[in-house]
Length: 112
Image (cartoon, rainbow, N blue to C red; front, side):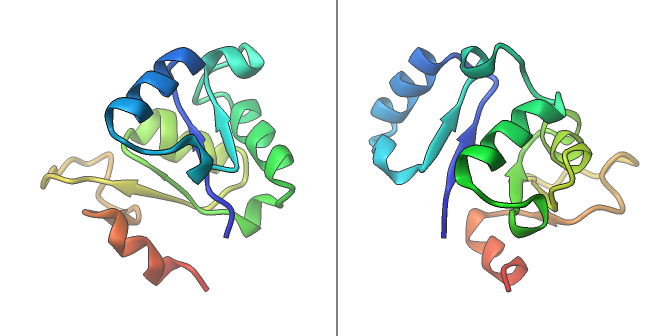
């Protein structure tokens, strides 16, 4: 399994956050920040860049994000299956009919 990270932050900010969270950068095959390709989510090119770097097709990927517009719809626009992570119960008309999880532990039920 290949794991990538796409963030709306700059690469230096991502490095700092990972260090603070005690998460090794080596856990990720690719890290894409705003300054990586000079575009930001929800631009589909951001997601396509990550797919290209991972050498996977959109239908071979699964994107998990916590922002409906930037993450969920951005990944969908790039042709990727997507799941919204909502750690708190938030019921809105925007998220009513989409795949959602409450914890990253739940992603395995979406992997074939």
